[in-house]
Length: 154
Image (tube, rainbow, N blue to C red; front, side):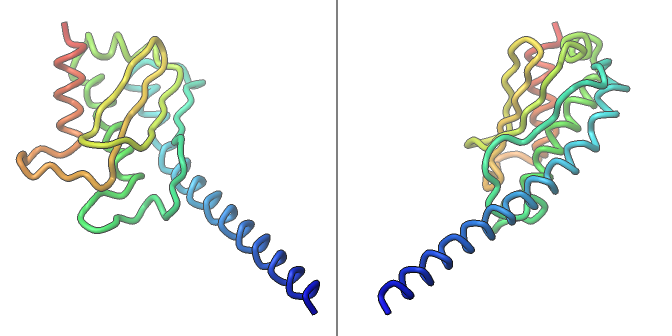
């Protein structure tokens, strides 16, 4: 009887783990589908090559298109970051010149307002889906556009 219980519990644990893995894979695919939308926009507006990689790094744990509480959906926030890059390329030649060298864009979870890190051809968008800045009426896209232009438009 004990061995049957152990076998049953082991099977339950394995099944639960594979279900969670399958669900996370589904969430990652949804996020990648949303990020892939921006590749032609970056190619056409920023002058990057069509070999650019755009990915989300990290565990999502939930549908990336759904919000939790009063925050943003992770896919929505990554999209705003990519929109900010495209818009900045369209409206600032110095920003476009810098962004034309991108080979890899990564969106990942962090804390606080949306920010970026640029190192050579690698750009990281750091997002916090639970963060809402109530002291400004600017969207995360507008906040990032302002940062990009301030830092790169020289």
